Amino acid sequence: MNRHRIIVAGSVLIDMLGYGLIMPLLPFIARTWSDDALVVGLLGSLYAAMQLLVAPILGAVSDRIGRRPVILLCLFGSALAYLGLALADSLWFLAAAIALGGTAGSSMPVAQAYIADVTAPSERARGLGLLGAAFGLGLIGGAAMGGALSQYGLAIPPLLASAIALLNALYATVALPESLPPERRRPQPLRPYNLLAPALSALQLPAVRPLLIAVVLLNIAFAGLQSNIALFTLTRFGWGPEQNAVLFVFVGICAALTQGVLLGHLQPHFGEARLASGGLGLMALAFALVGWALYTAWLLFPLAAMLAIGMGLAVPAITSLVSLRAGYGRQGAVLGGMQALVSFALLIGPISFGLIFDSFGPDAPYLTSGALLAGAWVITTLALARPIVSFHPSENPEAQV
Image (cartoon, rainbow, N blue to C red; front, side):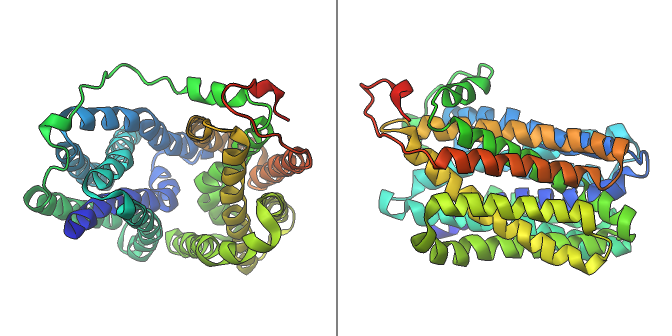
């Protein structure tokens, strides 16, 4: 079973390898046909939109026909999407390849379900932790691979990613068994997934509403950064894919160290409320400094570290606080609503910040992000200054402070 879990984790790693590879290189690939930051933002949002729409459908399909065929389909689809990125000869071809990549990269719910199928409850956290490690390694590895190989041509990184995905798919075809026997399958309906319902339901609770608004502002700002940082560094410093890949890897390492090491040491001493407020404040300051004062390339690295550390502290702390304030028996629904809000923020950020970049220049997105995060900091700090009253499902959630 360990070998099977590793194969499934490999599918997640391949998905994130593609995302990590696409984001730093996308502005440079798209420049063949368009110099507009808005176009880059639209392409980045297209990837996120396909994942948002397809992931719940794939989960329902895997409940109906089994996990194995869905995972294999995603792996072969990823190989084809990366090949499309390498061969794209028009903006429409590039958009189609990115849409296919987002669709094929939506296998995380299926991979999580596979792990749940084949592990005992006592081992489940460890198995899901393996998926989390694969997620992070794929993101960092994709950025590193894209930067290192782009000097030989922008088509080389996606060609290599296509070959890796294809080999993984072929190996999984031979070695990966089905985890869901026919008697445990359920014919889940494949009607359109209502994404607004859980988000609107979560926003009905006064105790979590300010924190959810802060989460939306944070993710809009960070998604905007992800989509146009390469255009910013190109415009300001003349950086190419190699330098941007180094920056992406550096941010990934800082975030991993923050969540894996620093958070565990700070949480007992400061608590979630101070970590959430402090993390948001650190991010707001870093964004503002990028927009106001960054005219020396090496200064981008300490500011990027501030961003990664701030986000690594704020996001887990806010998530924990949302779960606590959701009230007895509501944690799953409220956290699901928060994830839906995050998904919408990931769509809005790249498009809106691409438009801001084109209209007002490379500094404007970062000053805007600083303002959004300052607003998130104020909202969170004021919300956490108020006490909360726990309640049971029989009580009125509107009475919660």
